[in-house]
Amino acid sequence: MRIGLLLWLVLCAAVSPALAQNLTPQQRQALLDYKLTLPGAEHLIAAMQEMTKYVVSLPDHQARMQKSATMSAADRIAQLEADPKAAAILKQNSLTARDYLTGVPALRMALMAAQGVTAPNIVASPANVAFAKANLTQLKPKMDAADGLSR
Image 1: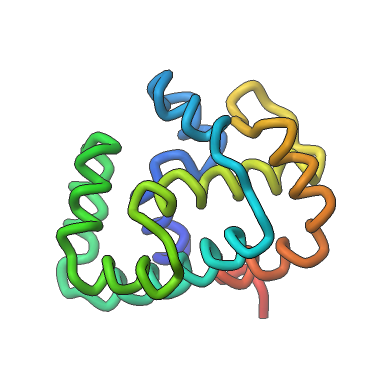
Image 2: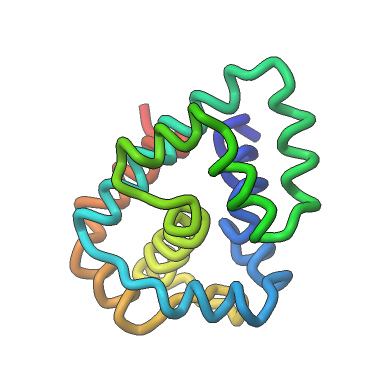
């Protein structure tokens, strides 16, 4: 598994449908309440690429990923806010830590649902699925590139 994707899985703790089943009711509701927009999606993808590069460059990135996997959502938010480089990446992309940690999985799951992936553990509001369907050809290649899936 690519380190970038692994990092994203750990940081967001809701990236894949398998992890979504472990969401708290509050996290699930936050995903449903998150409203995706095209500028917002562009910011999320850009931040995800930069954040992955940054965290993977750290000598202790594996320990950070393991620690992050056991943290609450509030603790992950606090961790991002307390890290000057991570905070700068978020600020540069007009995002808060909460926006990032909720928006990236909201976008990913909406894109999955827009592609016809159905599972009870995919959490996406009807509005976000409609948004993803309308913008799938534009956003999917960018998300794939951010995941390291494109050439």
